[in-house]
Length: 204
Image 1 (spheres, one colour):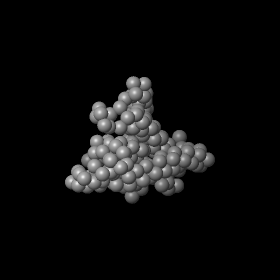
Image 2 (cartoon, helix red, strand yellow):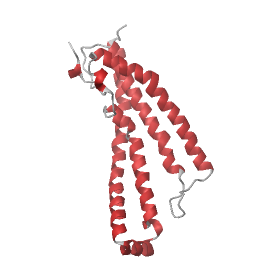
Image 3 (cartoon, helix red, strand yellow):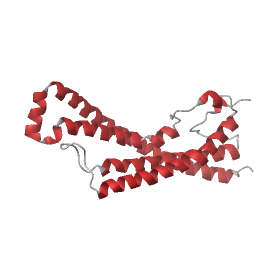
């Protein structure tokens, strides 16, 4: 049964709202690449010019030790990776197996994406949110710290970004799925700003 124009407009509005949220979080997280690059460059230089690192540690504290720098690198990398998961999906940047998909009609691609999203992606992301939340809480309860004696403390902070990242991936999946409902059961004459499909791929 085709959607009414009013229902379709409502679905598109909800989808766009979710997409905006996911995109803003993803784009904002990329600013963390700036300190990530700076810290990485500093760590490389300090390894070659050890006297600089010794002077910085002596005058500004242990934060400039090599171990802390390296842990900050992978902490920032993890945060960026987690927060752009949803952004990547809404911009169709995730890896796909296209040797079958390329031969599908536009409507078939939309249905495969919709049911794959509904049956696999969304349940999987919710499961990941649940277990990564437990993973973070356990880390907080035991006051987990770095395995290194001179590493970073409060390991639960970085682990918090796992459920957050999966949650925004879930929102991205919901945004795509709602849009696909409008594509499959809505007015095909009304062109939408598609996220995981391309009207140019439509086969006659």
